[in-house]
Amino acid sequence: MRFQIKRNMFFLLIMFVCMVFIPLLSIVISKGRAPGLSDAGKNQNNQNSDERYFCVFDEAVNKTVKIPEKEFICGTVATEMPASFETEALKAQAVASYTYFSRAKQEFQKKNGEGEAEFTVNSGKWKYYADVQGMKSKWGDKFEERYNKIKSAVDTVFGQVLEDGDNLILAVYHAMSSGTTEKSKDVFGGDLKYLTNVSSPGDKHAEGYETSAEFSLEEFKEILGKSWSDCNFEAEPAQWIRDIERTDAGMVKSVSICGHRTNGREVRTMFSLRSADFDVEYGNEKFIFKVRGHGHGVGMSQYGAQFMAKQGADYKQILQWYYPGTTLVNRRIFFQIYKKFFSIKENSTKEKEI
Image (tube, rainbow, N blue to C red):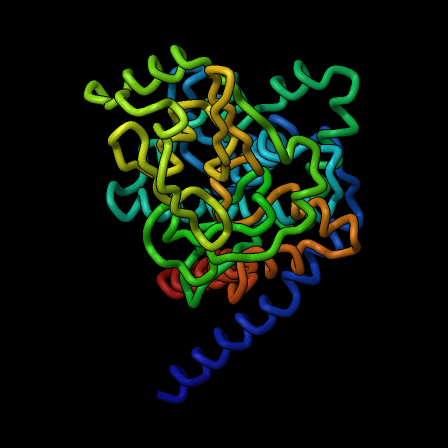
C-alpha cells in the first residue's frame, strides 16, 4: 500500500515537472532557432515520432495524403490570408485555422475512425491548403520572405486552439463583413453563442468592401430559370424583387423573387455575388446589385483582424473580439505531457517485468 502511494506521488511529481519545464524548453528552443526553409516540405519519414498529421484527400494529386499539422497550417494560412497582412493577424488566422480543422478531424474520427481522409483539399487550386512547391511557383522571388513570415507566425502559436467549455469551437472566418459580423443561426442554423453580432468597423475601409454586379433583363430571367422553372414574370420588372427581410447585421435573410420566397445566400450563389448583404435596383432594363462585404460574414473577419492588428491589437485580442467568451488553450503542451507521462510509465513497467 505504501509502495502504491509512493508510486502515485512519483507520477504526480513527474507530471508537474513536465507541465513546468516542457513549455519553458519549447520557448528556449524556439528562441534559439530562426524560422527558415529547412523545415519546409520535409519527408514524412524524417518527422519526429510525436508528430501529428491531418489525413486529407488532395484533389490535385487525386490521392489521400498525410500532412504534418504544422506544415498543413502554414499551407492553410498561405491560402486564406495575404502574407502582407500584419503578423498578429496571421497568428489569429493560424489559431482559427488550426481550431477549425482540428474540430473537423475530431468529428470525422468520431464517426468513421482513423485511417481515412478527414476532409478534402486541392493544393493545386489553393483550396484550403498549398504546398511549398505551389507557394514557390505562385510567389516567385517573394517566396522566401512570405513563407518565412507565415511560418514564424505559425511557429509562435502552433498548438493553440479556441474552446467553448471543453469543446473545440467552430472557428469559421470570412474575408470581410458588412460592418458587423453575422450570427451563426442566421447563416448556418444552430445558435452558437460565440458566433454572434460583433462590430467590425475596419471592414468598411477595406479595398473591395463595396462591389456591384449588373444583369440585363434577359440575363436575369435566364439565371432565375436555371433554378426555378415556374417563375412569374407577369409584374413589371421593378416589382420582381420584393419584401426583403434582413438580419440584425444587414444580410438579406429572406426575399421574394418572381413568386419564390428564398434567402440571401441562395441569391448570392445564383448571381455570384461577394456576399448576401445587398441592395437591388432596376432601371434601363438592368438589375444592379450593390454588395457590401465579402463572404458569409460569420466569425472572424480577416480584414477586420488586419485593421485591429494595425491599431495595435495582438492575436489574442483579435480572437477574443471575434469569438467572444471562448478560451485560448495550448493543446500541444498537454499532448506532450501525455506522451511523456505514458512513455515513462511504459518504461517502468518493462523494467519491472525484466
